[in-house]
Each structure stands twice: as structure tokens, then as C-alpha cells.
Amino acid sequence: MSKHQPGAIPASTDFSRLIERAERVLARLEATLPGTPEAPDWTAATAFRWRRRHGRAWLQPVAHPHVIRLADLQDIDEQKQRIADNTRQFLAGRRANNVLLTGARGTGKSSLVKAVLAEYAAQGLRLIEVDKSDLVDLPDIVDLLAGRPEHFILFCDDLSFEEGEAAYKALKSVLDGSVSAVPDNVLVYATSNRRHLMPEYHDENLQARHVDGEIHPGEATEEKISLSERFGLWVSFYPFNQDEYLAIVAHWLGAFGLKPKAVERARQEALQWALMRGSRSGRVAWQFARDYAGRVGG
Image (cartoon, rainbow, N blue to C red; front, side, top):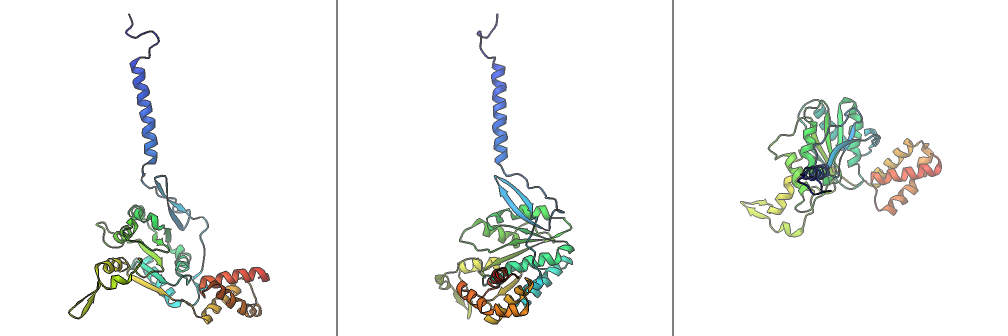
């Protein structure tokens, strides 16, 4: 006589279905968990972006990087020299520093990093752009790069932090302070409009102490300085004067095919353009040159 009522589903079948359902739930759960980042095809590009979506992280090749030549960057010769020297030391396997590029907006900080990649990519230089929100992943990125024959610049553009951000501590740890050492084939190049990467307030100056005739900053100021001091090389950029701005405009108009007389005729319009934008930066000069060359057929 059967132990089951007519039409009843055997207990073993119920258990099997329960197991199948549990396995499907686990599979969906695993898909949402952070996975181990996989190395990209390193031959696919010279520049990469760190991406994180739905709990997964990977290096995405940049198929068409913004190519700019060092020669195209005008009136920042000293800054170019310092960055180029540091990068050549890095590629030669000699000692080199992490770099913080700070100063006025539009003066060529980001463009200089891109130009360095274009200049030295054939010598094994690679660039990985990391957004501020993803700086907490820096240890994972560094692990992917360790042991590779290429030399990598981790590029953090337009950095600024607020109090208590996790990304601030992650960058600080990778630069100098983690138990594990950063491999010799990795440097960090960062740009910022702030020298100390964080907002500074007047009342913080009131916390300064005088000890034996020396000024010692307060704890809040010390904390802010501690990150920027981990960059061994500081490179400062300054606003351009009128003559420097016009020289940059002339360079780009020439690069866009305009003849010297046409460049001279553009002078007054270039000044008006800068006045409307409230800036005489290299970026504004480049934007004017593109507009003018497009209108006059250059």
C-alpha cells in the first residue's frame, strides 16, 4: 500500500525543487557581489579607464584617447620639463615621484598628463584614469599592475575631497602608508585646483600653536597637508597674462591651418572671447581657435 495520498507530490520532489530554487537565488546573489577584477588585453590600448558597474570592476581600454603633443602646450615650459624628467626617470627604472599638479583652471594640467602619455607610450608608458569615487579600489588596481613590464600612471583628474571621504583615506594609504608597498611600475599623477586637495577654513588658522618660536598648524590643517605631502613632486600652474594667452591662440590657429595674416586679424576677437569667458586660460584659447578656424574656413 502506498505511503502517499493519491495525487500527492513525493517529499523527495519537494526537496529537489527547494534545492533548485536555492541555487537560483544564490546565483543571483553571486552576480551582485564584487568579483575579482580581471586583467584586460594590455595590447588593446595605451590608456584605460577603471569601471565599476553592478558590483563588477574592470579596466576598459580607451579606443580613441585624446592625443595631444607636448609641443602643443605653450607657456608652461618649466612644468613640462619637470613632468617629462620625472616620467623619463620612471620609465628608465630609476627613482621617480608621484605628482600633484595644482593651480588655475584651464592652464594645461590635465593636457600635460595626456601629452606625456602620447610622448612616451612607445616606451611602455600606460595611463589608467580613475574617478574619485573609485579611488577606494586603488589596492585592487595596483594588484593587477604588479609584475607587468609596462609602466603605469594612475591618473586622478580634478581631485578635491570633503571631510571624511573614504576615497581620501584610500589615496593617502596607497601613496604612502599602506602595509603593502606600491610596485615600482606604478605612479600616481593627480590634478587639482586645491594645493591641499581639501577646503580650507579661516578658523583652522586659529588652531595654530607657537612652540619655541615655530608655528605648528592645528590638527585639522595637519590632516589636510598630510595627503598633499605624500606627493613627492608638486607642479604649480598660474593664470596666463594677455600676451601669453594671445600666443596660445596664435599657436592653435596655426595648427588649424590659418595663415599668419588671418591669425593677426583674429587678435581682437580672441581678446573679446576671453573677456566674455572671464578667463585667459589655455583652454579658452583653444576653444576660441576652434571656433574661429571653423568660421573662417581654417
